[in-house]
Length: 167
Image (cartoon, rainbow, N blue to C red; front, top):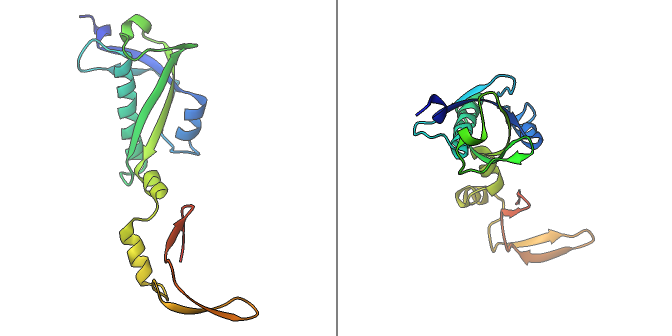
């Protein structure tokens, strides 16, 4: 098997949308499309999907280094293009690409911190927060509604709404 069956030297450029999220105002992944990168696979022949997996692994390592290991990221390459041609995952890389080609990659990154922020507080955190509140569930209360006071009872505490917690 020729060396090109297991490796290629490629210029890898992010799509415009990926560049926005991976760049300095986003995840700050240090990446240059000005130098070719040597993409290798352990099990020849090299496929388009192998290139995708190589890019994903590299982005994940770079993100871990950029956050000094405080956050983890999982990258997914959505598509890769050579010019206006989309590269099919199952194709052999050597049949579609040659050393020095510039491919454009559309990728996404899901981070542990973003997932935690999106899911909101867990039930344990809510329980702890409820213990710190002035009133508990089913407590009888008197509420000042301006001109007068009305009696009632607490029907819910620490309600999560729109990603925010209302006591």
